[in-house]
Image (tube, rainbow, N blue to C red; front, top):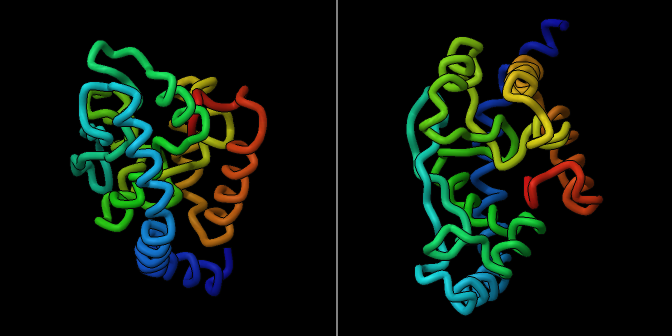
Amino acid sequence: MSDTGRRGTALWPPFKRAADFACALILSVILIPLFAVVCASVLLSRTGAGPFYTHERVGLGGKVFRIVKFRTMDREGKVTRTGAFLRRSGLDELPQLWNIIAGDMSFVGPRPLDVEETAMHAARSGAGVYSVRPGLTGLAQIKGRDRLSDEDKLAYDIEYVEKTSPATDAGILFATVRVLLGPNDNREGKI
């Protein structure tokens, strides 16, 4: 990579954070009506709880944070009809815009793992994956998501960290849209 390319890539993380914040804030405001409809649908689906679900995940620098999603299961752990639609469409992930605003996440990066996935955390930590913010979508999500082994996901996460740039992120975002709008064979109901 040329010196100019390295300088451009080095400038990306601070600019990326500012762009993530601004875009997530704007989208959160624009999508208020959609949030209201989804909240009402979740409440009417009789989950027995509020419309949001939070769960501990590991993010930048190995820091634990609470990821926010729309609730898709009832108290018995069964996916509701509304929840199945939300997962299939990826709408259950929309509240993660708030995680992006808070600085816990980015639009693009390795997906944050559950805190209990200790073996994967050790591997990710050793490979430098926690040097970037986790993302709403990432390279592993567009390459097969749940069809991939943990080793393959880790390899894609490492590749992302090594190649992070505005062009990489733009390509992943466009590919995510294609995956979401395409057949369901590449995802488990969501990105």
